[in-house]
Length: 196
Image 1 (cartoon, helix red, strand yellow):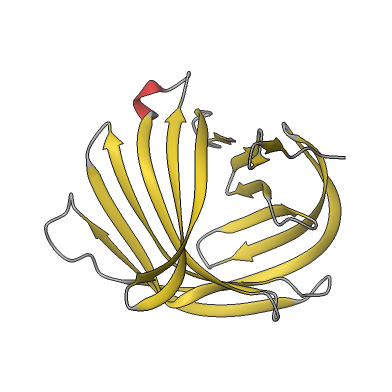
Image 2 (cartoon, rainbow, N blue to C red):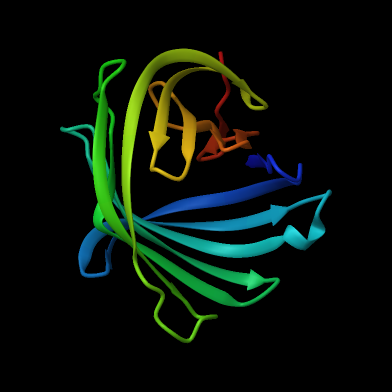
C-alpha cells in the first residue's frame, strides 16, 4: 500500500496492489520477466481520482552485475474508464545497485506511449537522466523506520529523491517536485515487512 500526496493540491491517494511475478514473457520483441498487479486507488479527499486497474511490468534482473533493466509497462484501467496504456523504453531504462556513496550514472532512452483512448501515434519522448547514490540513512514512513539507500534522480525537468530498503530493495519513499509517495504497508507471500 502506497500513500501519495500531491504537493500542489494536497490531494491524498492511497493505492493498494497485489503483485504476482508471472515468469518469462515477450514485450516489444524482448524476452523479459512479467509481473501483474491488481491496483485499487482510492482518495477520501478527491474521489474523482479513484480507479481500478491491472498493471503489467516487464523487466530483467542481472544479479551478478546488480543491475535492473526496465523495458516497459502496460496498464489496463477498468474504472472510471476502460483504457489501455502501454509505455516502452528504448533502450530499456536501467538501475544500478553497486555504487559507492556519491557515485552517479547517466542514461538516455526514448519513451513511447500508446493509448487506446488516442487514435493517432503519440511522438516518442527522449529522456536523459542522472542518478546519484547519496548513501545510507534511516527513513521513517507509515510502515515503520527502515535503513535505506538514498538516491537522487535528475532528468532536466524534474528532481526526485527516493529511498529503497537496504537488503530487500523495497520502495519506501519518494519526493518529486513537492509530491510525496510513502510506503504504508507491505507483505511478501502474506508475511508483513516491518521496519527496525
